[in-house]
Length: 149
Figure 1 (cartoon, one colour):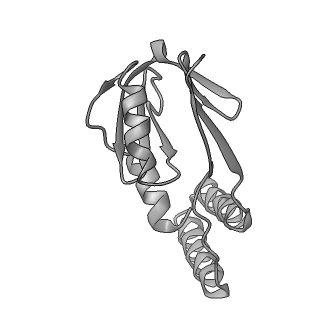
Figure 2: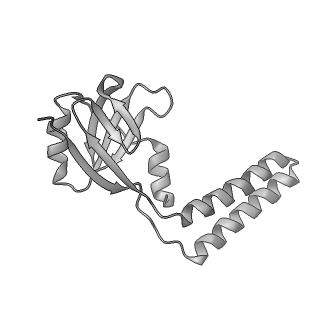
């Protein structure tokens, strides 16, 4: 029998936005755009406006459920598959599974665990295939959580 562990989590923790949050976002965007125009940096002004529209749209989007599976060949996250041969190590910290891959851009893959009791089961399973090594969650992931994304 092939051993595997599966779980389902939301891709991120959704935070409801108040109208004040959108006003603050808009004010910051307008101020940044005006400053960019004053300094004749029109491309930056356009970028700020586009980034603000995208940020507002993403903040309204509800998180999707992600299906995660650990099996004897690798880690499957929805339609993406990460074979163990392309992963260097793993680390579990604060209900998150961090996988160090050989990808040159964004080498740390962050997956949420369903609960803290589940951590030991995942850890003992992954130790069969990967080494455990202390890893840090990427700065941009932490920043997005602070901002609320």
